[in-house]
Length: 96
Image 1 (cartoon, rainbow, N blue to C red):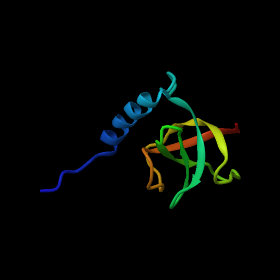
Image 2: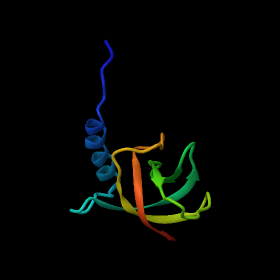
Image 3: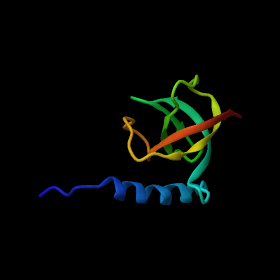
């Protein structure tokens, strides 16, 4: 029998990954993560210095692979992005 994994179970595990990286969400659930942008299969990725990757839902924002940035946003529940520890809905992105 296959075990089903719910979205709630996945989302509840994500903050632990973020906390281990030192990028604990603030009380409003917002994140600030620094890393390098990379091309993912469906969506751009940010890869932290520790190697943890998150997909980015960036809308029409322009970006370049290899660019170092700080991403401001929050984890989204559902996304077409299929890579990383989760998807961050980007509210702002700043070059470093």
